[in-house]
Length: 233
Ligand code: C5J
Image (cartoon, rainbow, N blue to C red; front, side):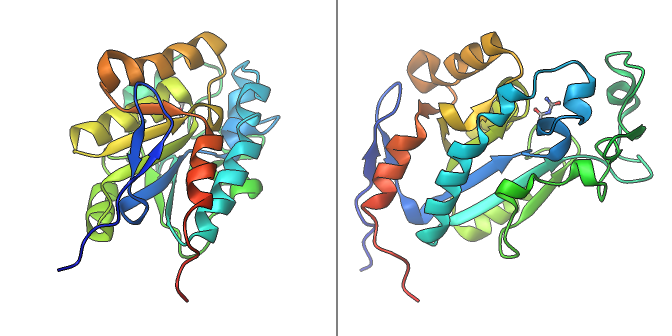
């Protein structure tokens, strides 16, 4: 009978996360040029992109180590079809901004699939074997095939990173939790334009005994990854 290897305990709050590498995927949320790069949609809206850019280096290190161990990686991008047929009117007009989704921006049409600003930043660019989930909403499970992919891959744990902490990361963690996944969020690999939302977004995940999941630091995950054997070729 095949036995599962015993899980590795990763230091986390509210208590250690029992990491099962072969059934755990790294899910990187919306590390898109329009959110992170100077001159993108995020900055046009008046946000300080440096609050998000500090997550690039820790994500790069985590991604490199994750790939080295041959573990599963998935990426998401928030955006819409070029004809905007999947963009609800409520989302288009929300915020009453002069420039909104679908309009011309500095990196092409804002949050439209295929445009430069919609793509993932070069520092974390997906490999061809890594699925990219194009999502029209904030949560990565809404109107996508993410759940089916994870089920087919035998995944039941997620390390969730990316932006923004209180919006797409939190929504995705909540959706994942309701579908039976255990989520671990490394605090230095998620970012918000607003420091107070960064703090509260993480607190909300780990509150009440880990109501939506666990919060840790990428170093704790890197240390656990170091103990794993390299993949069999
Ligand atoms: C937002 C996201 N904040 N990826 N998107 O609109 O969090």
